[in-house]
Figure 1 (cartoon, rainbow, N blue to C red):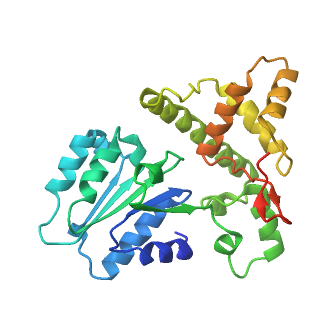
Figure 2 (cartoon, rainbow, N blue to C red):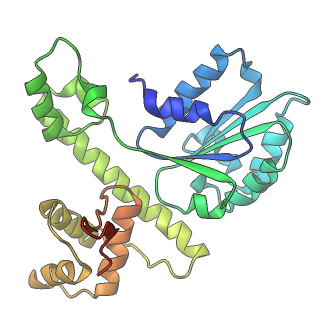
Figure 3 (cartoon, one colour):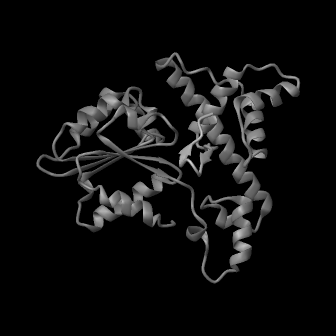
Length: 277
C-alpha cells in the first residue's frame, strides 16, 4: 500500500474539528484505511471507529437513511469520541438526512467519501471541508533503485494506478486493466446518474454508452486543445449521427463528474482572471 502522506497530513489537521470531512476522487478508500490506522496508533480503540463501505454487500441493508442512522446510533459508545467513516455515501438515498442528524450529536467526527461530483459540499455548505484527491504522482509511484527515465516513460504511457506497478512487464495485461477501470467508471456513472435523476428532474438520462464513449475518445484525442460543446457536437454530427448540443453538454458533464476528464479554463495572465467567453 502506497502511503498518501500529503493527503493523510491534511486529514490529520482536521481531526476532532466540528466539521464534516468530505473526501473525493482517486484513492479515497485507501486514505480512510491509512487514517484509521493513524487513529489506532494514537490509542483510539477499534470500537470507537464505525467504518461503512456502501459497495460492500454486508452493508446493503443500510442503503436507506433511517436504517443507516439507527445502525450508527446503536453502535455509539456513550461518553466516548466516535469516528464515523461513510465510504461511497452517495449510494444511500437521501444520505444527507442521516449525516445531518449525526452532525448535531456530541463527540462524533464524521468522514464521508464519494467517487463522483455529487454536490456534497453544497449539501453541507458551511459545515464541511473537501479534500479532492488526485491519482498517484510520479514521486509516489517511483521505486528507488530503478531507472528513473524508463519509469517516467511508463508513468506517462500507462498512468498512475497502484496495481499497474505489478503488471507493467506485461503490456497486454496493463492495457486490459486500464480499459477495465475506464469501463467500470463509465458503467457506475450511468447507474448512479439514473438514481440521481429520480431526485433531480433536471438530470438528463445518460443511457447511450456508444455516444458517451465516442465523446470520451474525442476529448482524449484533443487534450491540450480548446474544446467547446459546439465543436464536439460538430464532430459527432460529421460521423453521421444526429445529436443536440444539450445532449452533448449533459454527456460531457457526466464524464467530468466521474473525474475521467478535468476541464482547464483559459486564464488571462495579464488581467489575472479566468476568461469566461
